[in-house]
Image 1: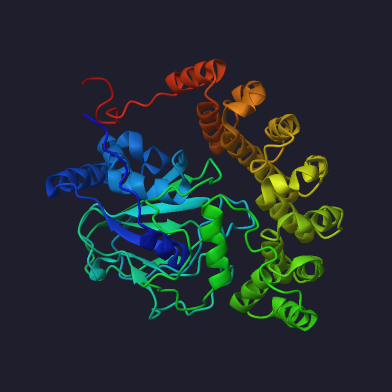
Image 2: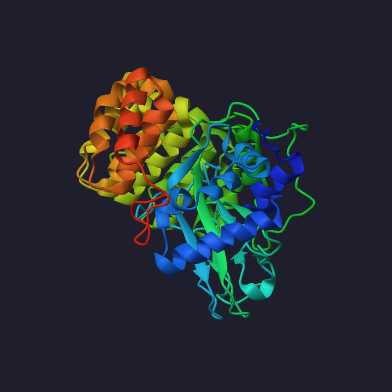
Length: 469
């Protein structure tokens, strides 16, 4: 069977994803395909319970969903052509008339600084017809970049419902606020949640790009805040530009003072102020650095977002902040340096020294940020290999994920990844396997194949069918 080419998103769809943080799309499988999928799901859930991370091997036909050109095209467009399907996946079953609470998904206990850039995404797939009364997922558009929930827990007029025929799915920014809605009908409703990660930083558009300039989409759904500068910066980032806002506005002292005063205001206002300050040269950077050092963790975090798009002018001040006594300040500075990537290469030695820091969240942030840097390569790879030996499991699994972003250039870490294949934590093992796959050298492939064969799953073996075909 010939593999179908990904059906890439259009410019307008990408603009919608950047602003709204979500797209509702649909595959074109037959109704018989989804009926078979539902039959298998019903059987597995009734006889074995939720298969969790084993959802794909237990229901093999489900892989066809993630090979569908609408799905591969959407993921390629948002995350680049070599995106990773994360080891965590979950089938959500709901037959209750009560709604779930609004929430953002966690990073398995890791309280990381969430990226404004699309580095992570989720697909929520509905294998049955899902009218509004069956309880589709509710999504609050435009909230992917808001740490705080600024709306009520009940229905909000801007909420988007992922309702539709079987094969409908929501592609969402990983950090968006969402919830389960009431299943008034009380009939079985499945939502299959899979996570995906970018493994390559963008150098050029990975969607069906026709227009270079940013403009708002016609279908702007974000009801809670408008972030034109942030949206434009993200658009430029997806073209491969880092620090695209730098120097685009005058360094007017009065305007800078007014913007700096807004960093402690409501989150949407503060975000806009941080991105505006990023445009205003060294004076704007100075105001953001003062915000970074604030005792208010939210002011510090939002200032870090501005610094993360301020270009090389922010690097020295961020490096100085790495010595701060406040762990939040250090974590935010580490995040911003990682976002600046090669512009912050001289910070790598300072970052690697933080692998001795007693705070787990700082070491987590360090290995996460190092995965965005490729210079000096030897130091980055050796530091990530060291992160694989950390006492904290979250540091270990973030180090292995970061190595996957470096590809074959991380070959020196293969021996430590081989050890990580036997880690006590399931995600460290899974991420180490993924990294070996992306490194792709002969030794990496041999180690990966041996690991997969030793851990292979028989998809037809159940308690009721242990031995025979």
